Image: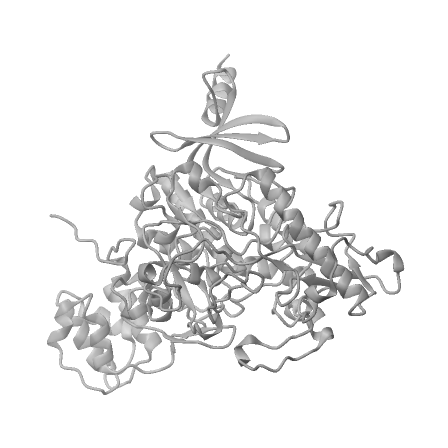
Length: 616
């Protein structure tokens, strides 16, 4: 009987019984939504030892990357942070290298949605700690003293799950109202966010959504031509071939239908149709609707896309292109879900607004210290299909690359809950950048770390050590700071990222076309006064050192270190500096020594980036 008792004890670890006698599974982390952030959150949490359940409504993984058909990556080409870089490496291996996925001009990385789904399932399948329930719907959730009890319908069967941490990775932030998380929808008032480009009054207007189409080159096959859809009007798509870049600010259209169609050219003779100007964007705000009402509205988006495909075939001459028959097994061959550019946005511990993106080092709160997700794509909003949308010239909103504060993933008041996907705490304007695929993958990875550490330590995410969370992200090849000139494979990467996250050595942000930049300049020199200024907030004693505009030498640096901490071992300082007294040091050398000797990154900060004072 001993073996039976032992087996039964083990079973009780993962399964308990509800008051009605129903089996209740227990997980460390439950993730609602197997989209971009849901997959990355699951991978990261599982790799940190958490037992993870992903609840996904479709039969695919990847969300907007795959199930919605947006398989052209926007941004972060030079910042392959964490799981985004891992997924890209899988694509390179499958297709045969970087050049094999540079098929369309909108992106450096394009792929077939079905391939993306298979690769993500392969990555998830390699982790023994992840369960995925496909074709499942979250019915109800109840907050417990610690954790959550969640009711789920899986392919017609109702089940109950207990979870220590709940992650909302749904496309529209559907768990926020159920969990009691405060949120907003639509445009903010400029007086609330201090964003000069925002309208005076807040409104509920969101970005256009798109039902993407994946087309395939069938050659001269008339069977692939669509019948004329009901309501088709060629005037609706009159300017679809205008490929003028909005950033040019020119009034002269550039008509090139071939360039328009190759915008989202995918490998193997396929084309992603996700075209904003007189294309298949449509304005629908379905966020607060019931599932039934949403489906009715989304049929309008599908019909609109089918009219555009008919237009491409019959008016623009692309009779060789038809809806791909080997991507989606839907009746209309359209994706499983729509591409939603906006969702509910939670009220988090902090909110990322435009001033913090444009001038991160000049704000009241040093939120840049708290980052764990990076992005470089510009502020990109789609509002062409709603005549009531305020006329905002988003092209004029110039930003450098940026990082996202981890506090934007944590609700202000609800515990044991993490926000992911497009529902993090950012302003409406900034959401036009944080909605893009690599950023959302990064959001998921950060959510996975927060969830796993919270479950392991038995605390709510807001109680975690922020620096511990960041170090785990670094250990998993993620960026804290958006420095494009220090590769994760570089042996100095972690030290430079940590010192960058203190602000002692700052990066230089540059708005640059559609791939903004921040440079650390590791090989550049640093002046004495700049180094003293950077160290002042961490080490007030640095003010006692007289600095000039001269470059920092090894001798000056050693003296400065001893000034801020006289207890340091002088011999160790010189062994780490490893330079002659008069030798001028680079920023990389200074960062490595600071990280090794003073370890400023280890000084605790809260989720607003301010120092935590410990009581004796």
